[in-house]
Image 1: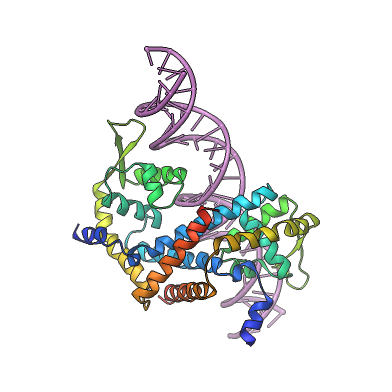
Image 2 (image 1 turned 30 degrees about the horizontal axis):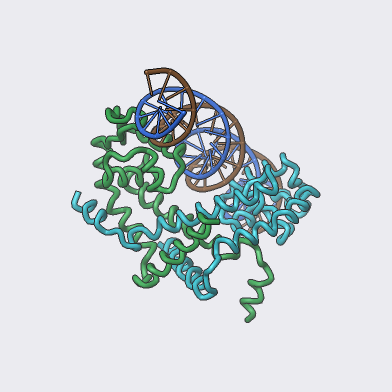
Length: 153
Length: 153
DNA sequence: TATAATTAATTGACATATCAAATATAATTA
DNA sequence: TAATTATATTTGATATGTCAATTAATTATA
């Protein structure tokens, strides 16, 4: 009762579950970045994600990439730009559709994937430690409800 | 290579729920921004959040603000800077501790709070539409488990 | 087939995220 | 009290987020 009373007094927006979602993803990204940097110093979480997605889905366009990682096209353009500069990726000509760019992982990129895939798995395991499969399914289901609510509003 | 093969086949929530969390918060922020801009054109979701938090917790420092809205101190400095420029806030001297700044909401800021508080409530209601109180509690509980996992890792 | 509409990617402008270093003030301790 | 340590904020550098406008290539339509 007393705890709830205290909570009730400060009914700020950040006390709601929607900000808990925001807080969660921020904490998760922090441990991801921390663990990644232990192994590879010049790469970000997002850049690493792009590598892994690209490895699993070769020949996807930037727009498809954007959809897969829930980012804006402009963001993807810039992320890839930086990755090309750092020799993780190459842009080649797409013969079939010259609007699209063909993204190719370099040797350095492939090596980085090998180094960091276990880190990704560890991060996930750490974050979800102690959660039952049922809880994870519940979480997933509820989140998708919220996503749908937002999309159809 | 084999690790990626395994990962590709595993499209269970365990492998993806953390991305679903990210997706959820992005979709939510989109409808927030959209609805806010209908009413007030020159303010962002975060700036609006700062106003509301400040209104509920007068005399808080920037560091406390940062903690409340789950942001970095540097981000808060810049958000407030912009809000001062746009006449939503004033910075005054804090006599008791000159390191801290005293944040004061202007008339324009107060008026904006009146305009946008209902929008915040609507956004929340929209996002959580159709979720039972039990589901929201489950969501909150599971997310806090993840936060704890990350913080203590 | 020429024109219009669509699509993929880029660019510009601005806001926010993150880390590290710097600054100024306050509190603690030798 | 002087020197050290801690705290609050700022600043710089770099990455990403978002929106709108632009460019270039493709597809659809009159």
